[in-house]
Length: 145
Image (cartoon, rainbow, N blue to C red):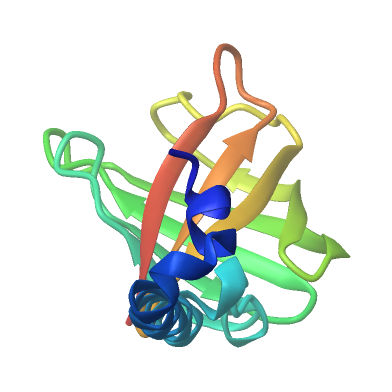
């Protein structure tokens, strides 16, 4: 029996009321925990963050309204890479980084313009989908410092 047809059948009135209470409680729980899937991107437009990577070294990020600076120390070589990008917000949760200055002694950082879409936020982190690199889009977590 389809769930909708079950609700319409008047002989199940007591069960229907019970089901409505369960359904209402479930909807309220979803609304309070996910805010209907909305993400709070505004609080991540500026600040200090870290993208953790044991393999490549943690990227320490400082973001202002106009620029983003990154500093990464390679855990294997000790070499320090510094980047400065102009940040352009496309919409509330999507931004583009345009390289301004690249100080990369190992020569591994390209000068691609990358696009970042914030797809999830938490109290002290956000998750972005990065496009503009060769291959599939990359999804990474960035923590607030």
